[in-house]
Length: 393
Ligand SMILES: Cc1ncc(COP(=O)(O)O)c(C=O)c1O
Image (cartoon, rainbow, N blue to C red; front, side):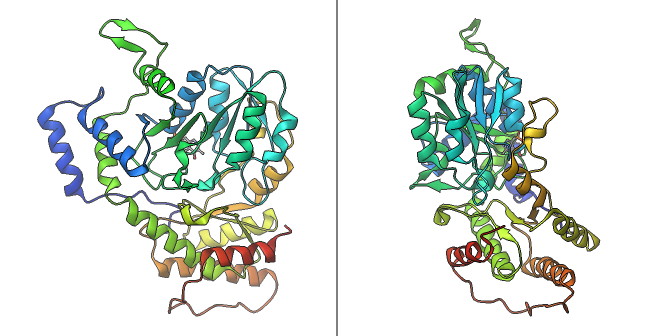
């Protein structure tokens, strides 16, 4: 069986050494030493000054909206994980959807201004699959209309933009360290801001609003994380460079093999600093996607419709048509991608996809010899070719 993803697990021995230290200290949660060490090491690794480790990526979004005191309407993307929209609604605000760009799959910055009303207070956009949004354009719009910007950077560990961690952008960025993410703490997440006052406010909010033993200076929630999750993060941080390298290598292998397949790939703007968090392919129509998914499942290979459905169709929001998002959400499939995926398994996945496509076209199956690895092509060269070949659907 080949799952769509597998969590990275460090050697048991490595994790146990941290667990032993927890037993010795008997300090399980409430701002313990491992949580503090993880925060320091993450800052060092990411090259940033401010972050807070929290219980998950959903609470991170809720904290961000609350800390910025947002109300009214928040402009957002319909192509994201459900938590992006549900957090807005949870905080008593109204999500106003703006359709996505068909190449990057991120919110279309040129459609944002039309959605702004006197009630708009912020833009909450997702860097989809780790691919940076049009950050500069979004910031210009936010400055012009005096709006706050939150980035849901749940997929972005390791992505950099203009030589800085992607987490540095926006008034607040949030991320998820869930087990499915390339860097994880089992459950977990973080909030990032360059504003020290905002950071302080979120630090208080994360811990019930406690500002002293018996004093509460903010309305708070329990968004803390614990020593066990921090221990997993500290172990995984030692391996994250290898994980990133492996995902890049596997993504290049996919691209080399699928470059002539009649599908479209996400356009990555700055791929030198991209993290290869997912490997999505966009089919020409929904039925081809279903067929490919079913063919893979016959061989016990599991891909995922991610993201599906469009968030503008959720039962608790005002439903609106988002044509580009609906087209992408209905045809997209994320292929298996994880650090231990073998090239022979990847070969098999690609052969099945190509064979399915050729079967569709009533052609004899074209199976490429894949025992020998082909020389790596530069991922940017391949991607520009893909955009040319498949640019129109
Ligand atoms: C884009 C996006 N936002 C938010 C979340 C929520 O993160 P968590 O599962 O840590 O609550 C996820 C998790 O998959 C996600 O992919």
